[in-house]
Length: 215
Figure 1: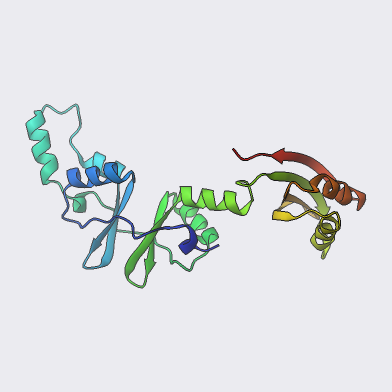
Figure 2: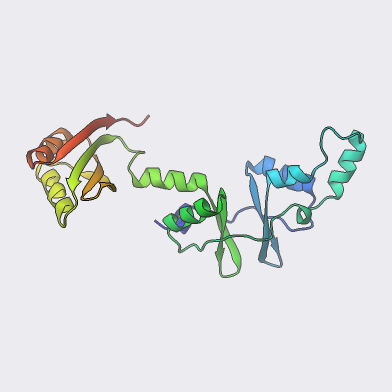
């Protein structure tokens, strides 16, 4: 799965000269927490609701409400935005986007196609994509199986499931220990119990089995 498959395309953007108050109102109206900052068709920064609130006068200030509103109206996005912006491409994998966010402790990344802002991908987009890839959004049966880490072992398991008349929704693998892998297989409900029995009959350790339902 690629970034272009899960990103929010054509995101709302602002220019550096937009007021802090206007930018906050845009975020509230559009229910977003970040805005790419664009000037002359080029990405020049990114601003978050936290950035905007941090440059606003503190509620504890001795200024009057009128003075506070006046100051906020004069402050612009340029004074709050981050100018060092980490980006990804629409053709990058979602795994790369996830690693970029993780390594830089950020919750979203603008997506740049050429020089234009093509979209934005957030940690929520990544989370939803992984849930879909793992089949968690579909009803079915989840099998957890521990296997020796050797060539062709997954094909053997898949063959047993196929012979039992069950259909695989998704497969995820994890290294449990040196020489042993744990696989999580999601199956469509039909013949899933037979598939679990077939996997066990092959001598593999089915350590967990649960049926999931989607509301």
